[in-house]
Image (cartoon, rainbow, N blue to C red; front, side, top):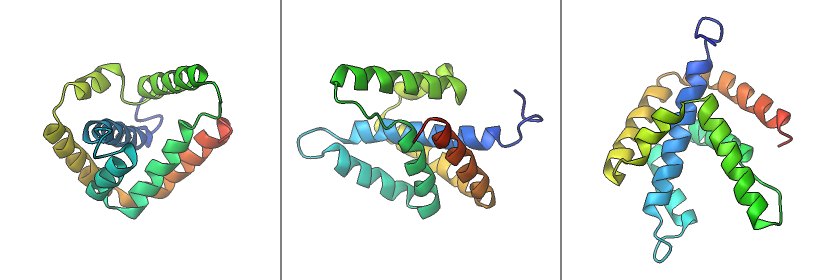
Length: 140
């Protein structure tokens, strides 16, 4: 797939990158003692602070929602979806380059990526439509 065939693929991939950076940063901020994952999510969402972008991220979050009772199935399903998502969006090499970053570096990258995506705000309705199709295909 090329950008000429799918001009909004890059836009979706930019959102995917922000989503993955956000998730990694939440996990770095949360320590399980003073800060839970929910507290860390609030802190990171304050960095993003744009209502419309956060709405798109929450829609994307629903793609990873697993409705199982067995914890092993939950982990396997999540891992499969994450691998599929990374493979179909930013790619494994790009994702692996995020894993070694320090918290400050990841935070700065998230801010930079957010600003770049917000410059294309007028295209957010297209992203919302793409996410709605993705969620419908996966029964979310």
